[in-house]
Image 1: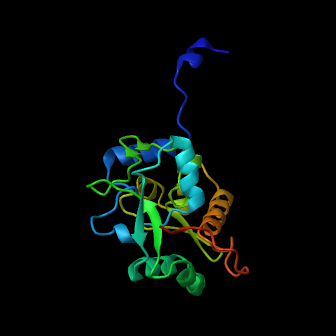
Image 2: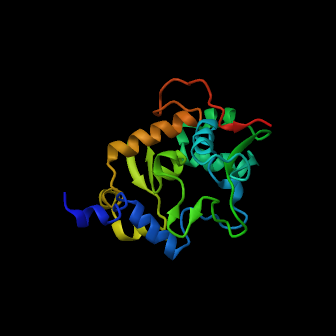
Image 3: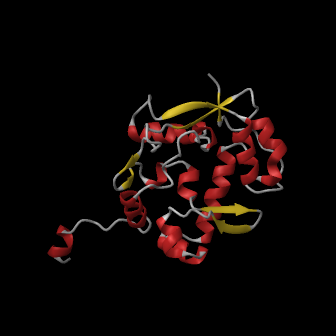
Amino acid sequence: MNVDRMLLPEAPPPGEDVCGRCAAAGPTCCTLSPGQEELCFPVSEMERTRIVEQVGLTLGAFVPEGNSGAFVANLVRLFPSDRDRLIRLFPETGQHLRLAVDGSGNCVFLRAGGCSLPRPVRPYYCRLFPFWLTGKALSAFAAPGCLVHRQGRTVVRMLALLGCTEADVRDLHGRLRLAWGLPPKEGMPFVTPSPARFRP
């Protein structure tokens, strides 16, 4: 083995570098506009537990948020075929957990070099972004601040920049659906709801 190679720091995985550069340039997908907190995606109990076990924190990383009409409408836009299920899973009288943000709207895990959480520990929504599935169609959110979106411009190039495949995205999307209490694919029978909703 080459000694010089052993002394070099390990290169970041594909995607980590581009996300780190995006974070350094800011703002990122990890930043909410003030007043938009209610629209932030929910964090399921499974995702919360995974984060807590990794970083050892219990307070300050998650915030209970009411299931407002705007929040539920946003989920329905993401999952149009699951409207009735989402209304049952996230009743307007209930709450869910979301990631906490600082006074500037930055996720508490955002650092100058990107997310401080290891990729496998991050919430599924974070790991999926900027990709999404509607039915069987893979697409990307039109996120003008996203460096991957600006540099890639097409889904295929964006996948390459992040070092992932369409199969990876489909798998993560199915896992996200399960974590949030939906069947892993549209049209499948209803499953036992996940405790994605926060119960005080």
